[in-house]
Amino acid sequence: MFKLRIIKHWLTLFFRSKFNDREKLLQRQKRKLKVFEKEILNTAPYYQKMLSEGKDIDSFPIITKAEFMAHFNGINTVGLDRDACMKSAVDAEKNKTFDSEINGYTIGLSTGTSGNRGLFIASEDERAQWAASVFYKVVKPRLFKKQNVAFCLRANSDLYESVQSSFFSFKFYDIAAPIAELISSMQQRKPDILCAQPSLLLLLTAAKIEGKLDIVPTQIISYAEVLDDADRKKIESVFNLKITEIYQCTEGFLGHTCAYGTMHLNEDNIRFERQMIDNQRFQPIITDFVRKSQPVIRYLLNDVLVLRESPCPCGSAMTAIERIEGRTDDVLVGEDEVGELVYIFPDLVRRRIVWAGEHLDNYAAEQTSLKELILYVDIADEYYSETCKSIKEALSNLFNEKGIKDMQITCQKGLPPREQTAKMRRIFRSFEMAI
Ligand SMILES: [Zn+2]
Image (cartoon, protein in one colour):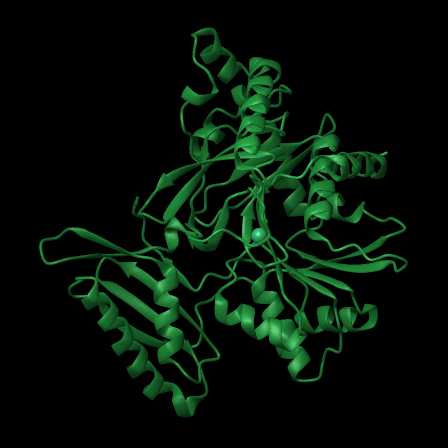
């Protein structure tokens, strides 16, 4: 049944017209949003009240994850209770049963980088639609050969395992498993399509260089963490292909790279408003007009996206993104001479570190207070002190250029402790600050 639903949604996408005209795309969004407002939001108590007061979807409040959770019972349209869902999701995670389900709805738990938990619900049809959408947009079809797909995830979920067909065969890999086990299993199965987060792709790349992993995938799909340029180049050169990047979070399937490697936002299902940070950078405010059981309406994401200046040669009408720069928690903050706050985006910090650290194996930078930064340097002993000195100098120059005074930089050898299943973040702030 689930498989049939996926096929149905896939065919709908296949026969749908393509979006090469921005004006038409926006008109379609408007139409879809109106229908959604009438048919779905009218059944969500939280929005129904606003509609009855004469408001419409464009004037609904912009909400964050905290508000989304606070109004959970009023926002979902299927009568689910937050506390019951939380209990079910937490139990499932604890027991590793991964089948948190209430009344046929799958309950997902997002930890989020700032620690506040989010609950996300999806019906079977919504899950099928998600899977169809990912396959249609991202996976390159090949005729006459069944594709072996290796999917690396934090926790098992029947969403991923249920997709077995005559075209694809899925194998799920738990990223909490010992890495040697994962490599030997992958070595046996030799996936055609490898899907994993960048930190794991880097480990697999290292294993391939060392001759421990001999796989030749035809497609690599990356998600869940920021894929920075240096890592992308390394993985692409070792596997000799172009990485497909998915921009996906518990809030939805938000974007993916096209054949030219440009990230496009999925504006066929989601409206993206922009909360501009500067001329090019913004935090997206998403309104999803497909998710019915738990509407995501004017929801402000923590992500910082950078707009692409030139149009993408693929001709898609969907907004092109230069890069996903990370979360707002990854933006460094300092003070200038007169105590005004100055922001430094992680990509800039990343580039300065990589330029200055020739023999680096890996690195991280953690800002622990307005005036303190810890630099983690993972490198062979012989290069350690020299590299620390040159990165420190490069970062001091960057802070000076930006007018930031008195940032103390200290060096530590190795990387900050991270649970194997936690997301890799190289540049981050560990103190709270709204930006
Ligand atoms: Zn493109």
